[in-house]
Length: 334
Ligand SMILES: NC(=O)c1ccc[n+]([C@@H]2O[C@H](COP(=O)([O-])OP(=O)(O)OC[C@H]3O[C@@H](n4cnc5c(N)ncnc54)[C@H](OP(=O)(O)O)[C@@H]3O)[C@@H](O)[C@H]2O)c1
Image: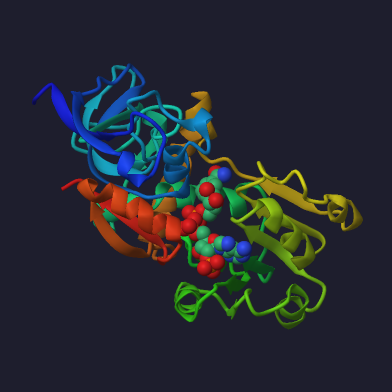
């Protein structure tokens, strides 16, 4: 094997054209790490937010290899790793924030940030899952509890996190109401298991609460928009209900009084935290193993709107930033 590999890096924050193809040393795994030959990655908002410089504390050191999601084949195993062998097909979230990521021929990460890839998907497609499926899983299975028959509203139901949220909420036998700004987006949510859909751009919260949540509010509000949108979430939830979100870092102006008035539960996920802290990384692999079972049982599947080669990463970022896609955009290491 060559000691060098191809990688796409950024040397500074900027627009999508800031990516450069270059050659760097193949990284060596530490004792508790594995090295994975990268088959595919995918685009998440965290990747373009890092590239833009919007969350500089999350950026890997320059020249920075971005992208958190990966699917590939284990190529080298650290001395202390028992869970994987060379040749295993895995998916994971080893870096891309806090440490070097997946936009290269090889990525190295803590063994705990990987699990065996679902057997029922082509390996490349598994790269659409880690960030969004871990997030949706933590929102519904860690930050709150959902019971059979609960009324759950999933905002952003055709987006990365939301389209998995619809499927997990449906798997938990809840009554799922899904939002989407276009007919195409609402149709996808229905195909994935939503019982009802709402065009939130044309319907008041009061109206859809009356129609789909008995007038009192949803038991669980799944809000991967967050920040100012939490005010909408607090309007949509019932007394004693739960709001789970991914974003509260720009929520300075959000009035928290409704949480007290209605005795609400609020859960906030930061899925990449184990990687940023270098702590509790096994939690990622354990959850990914559960998600692989859900995929193999037919409960969850990623919807891949489009595929780009690593060479086309700038184009994929531009598309992701428009929001004009369904589910996920995949990046394939051709
Ligand atoms: N904290 C974490 O651990 C974590 C993890 C993953 C993602 N995130 C964050 O969560 C957010 C969503 O991620 P994603 O991967 O799902 O992004 P995405 O694939 O771009 O999807 C975002 C979705 O939000 C919907 N949306 C936007 N504004 C809305 C509004 N005002 N009301 C209702 N829906 C709205 C859009 O659909 P419509 O056309 O229907 O509006 C779109 O489907 C991003 O900000 C991301 O950074 C955080």
